[in-house]
Image (cartoon, rainbow over all chains, first blue to last red):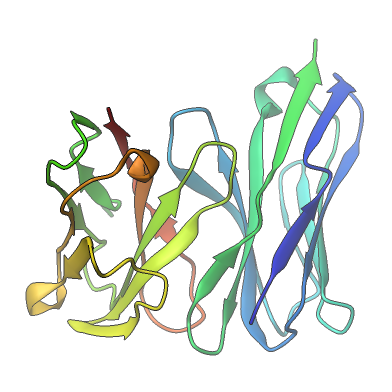
Length: 111
Length: 113
């Protein structure tokens, strides 16, 4: 059974700092790994999708990496801004098309 | 391309009442998912459809929850009777095919009092 863990559960950093969010999973037989952003009271916004054959994806200040062999993914946010404050969720899609989520990291960027 | 549509956005009901949520996935998306997200937790998969067939409903409390996806397009999720612990956000998502990007609706926030 696939389990997804996100560390840390919460993080506060001053504006301008670079930061890393971690995601680990137990079953490496995945199709892809996807990072989402969730603002309070809102749905999920897809940030980056990494296919199982890829090592990383980049979008603006965001970079996500995937290491299937170790069951890990990281989301790197460069030059953080107050607008980046949100909950970040990682999820992987397995061969059965199930999409399993971690509990998320609550990020607060201090102005 | 229109996104995943869900309604209603908010619903408040008393315990033991029934409630239904509606989801219209992105056109052409074969797989549809319903998730339950309790405050402070990650989304938990309730049921997964491939076209109009159920692929996985192992975590759906079938004594009170039901879902259908007639004609393989939109879907409804029903709770009857509701319990206090059903208070959560119910999210619908869809993917075009295996291994492709998942898109989520805005969710329905259910409060059971």
